[in-house]
Length: 103
Image (cartoon, rainbow, N blue to C red; front, side):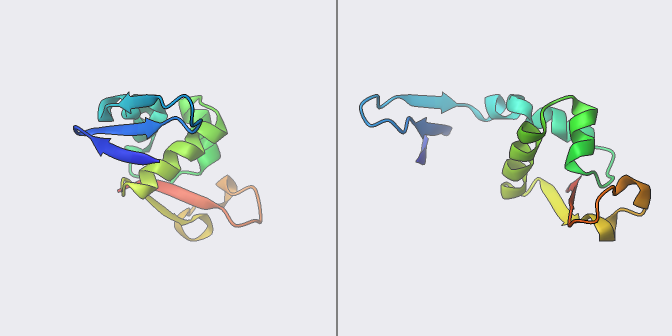
């Protein structure tokens, strides 16, 4: 459950007896991996999540979680990789893949 308290994002611990509130300033959230991803995407090109992982040297799960948050906040554009990436050598799979770009 999330709520706003004095301009900070608040997260309440899910365990009912603990009732601990963890406050995160907006800047602290940016330092949790999103700043590195913004730096990697600044060139304006479309990138696959595994390419961002190699570029930033962070785990794939962390990159995907950060990208999901950034998409929700409208910071990152998402597209079909087969349509937006011109270099077909970068697409190693025949499966559907998303590509990401900074808005």
